Amino acid sequence: MTAGADVIVVGAGLAGLMAARMLRDKGVDVIALEARDRVGGRTRVDTLQGAPFDLGGQWISSRHHRMRDLCEEFGLQTFPTHHAGKKVLDLDGRLSTHRHAIPSLSYWSLWVLSRTLAKSERLRRTVPLDAPWETPDAARLDGLSVADLSRDFGLSRTVQELFDVAVRTVFGAEPTEISALYFAFYLNSSGGLRRLIEIKDGAQERRVTAGAGEIAKRLAADLGSCLVTDTPVRRIAHRESGVLFGTSHGTMSARLAILALPPKQALAIEYEPELPPGKRALLDGFRMGSTAKVFVFYAECFWRDAGYSGEVTCAIPRGATTPPPLTWVVDNSTSDAKVPCLLGFRVGAPGRHWRSRPEAERRAAIIAQLVRYFGPKAASPIAIVEHDWDDDEWAAGCPVAAMPPGLMTQHGRLLRDAVGPLHWAGTETAEDFCGFMEGALESGERAASEVLALL
Image (cartoon, rainbow, N blue to C red):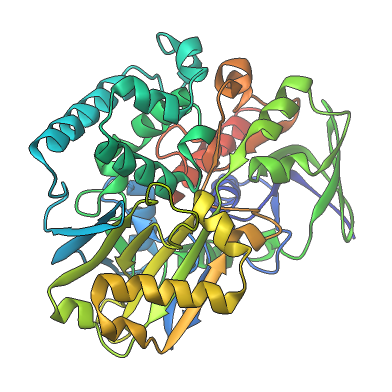
């Protein structure tokens, strides 16, 4: 295959699809290339138990206006995530329940938690979204991990455990693995810690009835022949005069390129000439989160009947040699509740431990954990479906690649910078809602605008 276009977009996740669509709508000759046999990147909707379920990104906030606009354009209905009822908190092996966003804790722990939220709020507001490396005290913050930051915050043991669970769930990574400066940027990008972790008025507020993965399918259908799947890009030769792409099906050419890929996947391409050392170090430094979604289907929503919301937050018990498999659980039933489902997340270090265990052992541990929270009716699921994003060749993890200590101040300013005719997109490059589907769309718009200014 030998073909050409004004612009070639590499990657047909939400970022690449949005960029290609924006260019096409401006009359640009554009081709989008996707390595997989499907579009969507880290979004994917499949039919499970006769209904659509998102194996990847799935939630939309009221503040995600691009996602909401696309849902409206494509006639896709949304519905609120179920959260009514008692929430379960599993701290150091002890169970408690609460009905509000803030769990039932001792007065001392509540005071420490309130202080922690206030401190994180003050910190995140100091971070410029377009240049987080210019944050006051950036070098010191970037030298700290999130674990170091939590010690600086002076957290009590109970609040420390809650904080660690929140970080583990959001990033699919451990607090020791993430830069405190990057964490503060991420909080500011998302509107604060509470918005990031809560359902009501938060990032997990609504779901798409047909699945959020349907949005990528609709964007792809709109692009038509501009989109080519099953075409991995192996080599990119770039000059100021243009770009040559070596693919699994031949060579293609373009004046400009947009690479809408996770950092490690962008680095896996052979470049000629090589990317600048700083850009390579940046892409190589990102650490993708480790996340598996575990769908546990039942014949009825028995937890609702018992007064539970289905939401569980689980910390690693102190001194435990084997962590519980699920860090967070939420009611993931269909909007009409005709397909009852609890969704659990295997994330971070506990997730990495359990993905190495035999399937039968893993599933027995998952069921035992749910029985502990919801009683004997949880012992009889009609099906369990696990989707481990670490096994995805073209994502190598989920939900987001985060920066470890030191990377932001050393190389972060290169994140969105073009390398000659090569421009960069992907949710990791977003200013607003970095790590979310909304951020992917924002990054695609930005990259397309950069390219349009040069054509």
